[in-house]
Amino acid sequence: MVSKDHKLSMRRQCTLLTLTRSNLYYEPKGESAENLRFMAIIDMQFLDTPWYGSRQMARHMKRNNHQCGRHRVRRLMRLMRLVPIYQEPNTSKKHPQHKIWPYLLRNVVYRAVQN
Image 1: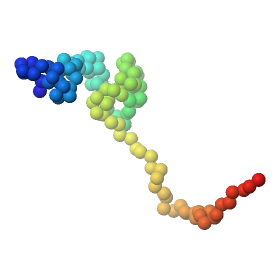
Image 2: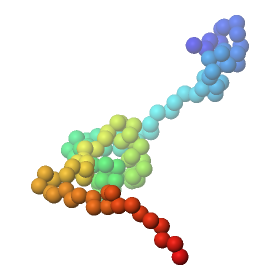
Image 3: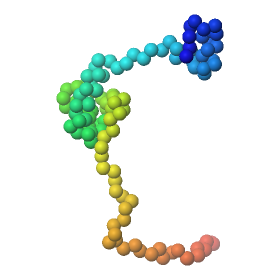
Image 4: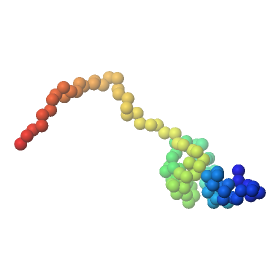
């Protein structure tokens, strides 16, 4: 997109493309070796227990003597796109045998009490 050999300056090319010039020189570093090792451990454990979220996964890591906190586990799980499987609450469905009581105040007119 942006070329050093173009007749327009780098600044002008970035302005036309609505890019900041710092984006041209930025090279992503990638993950560290320690994080890659943690990601492999998380991935292996997630295959066994797909219901583990970041909190349980962090507890599993600490039980196995890996120094990895919950926020780091959460970031790595999000990076690997791992989403735990869990049952959602079933609170909005009414039971078919429960009686529905009528609302007795539906047509009552309220009057303000004056002192």
